[in-house]
Image (cartoon, rainbow, N blue to C red; front, side):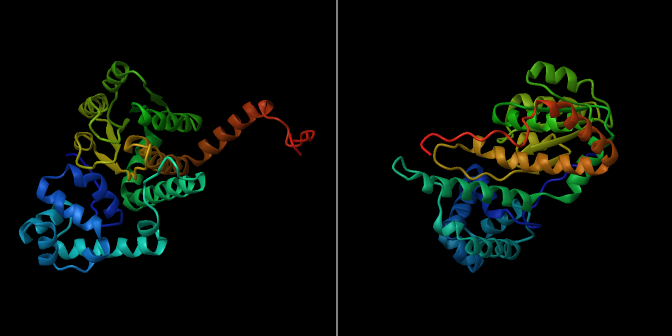
Length: 308
């Protein structure tokens, strides 16, 4: 029996970020409810089920179905979650003061504010959605695995390479495959007790799905890192970490997802390091010493800067 675990928004934060990502993918009536909530979260937080149904042009039954689709018992729980997040957003002044729009004429100060706010909010939403049980399961499996395979393409491949480098440095037997055929053949060699991690923002990257499915067929623990917890990738995984994404102009969702992916992977890495403390401390000391001669001394002769 699979021990698949996905985040249910009724248990923790990240609901508004999740609605931004998943809302457009929902059936039309449910999508309208998501749009109505996002258009004015504060009003939605205090609206009755009848009010929300009327404002979204749906029915109370559809609002109830919408709530249960998101993992809530009913509309009352959904409204509490919206109210909680609205309070958090109001405190930070992100929802009202900063949007993700960047115009060609905006100053770099404005660009800095928009990008920093979007990334910070996405990271906080991602952190709110992480279940410690999933971290425990994943870290314990990696710490004891004979083989760990990590696979991702495009910007997700960047995060996969970084994770492989970190784990390799603390003596975890890990491989990152950049070729899909190589990834598939090595996934077929995994055994029970091994781990396969697949990264895909959309959760619909065919090569990543096939690799995780192959690993699952051979008894490995499969872990998905995706922004869509009802995606095909999530369906084939035992453990799913849902990342939050906030797009800005010039940065599409897949690119913006990188920061949230790295947060999840960093949490897993630290949790593994905790469980292999002595081995990790020894490995880090050796690797630091190995490259120490290639570092410039701390005190270098001063040189006047141009124009000073």
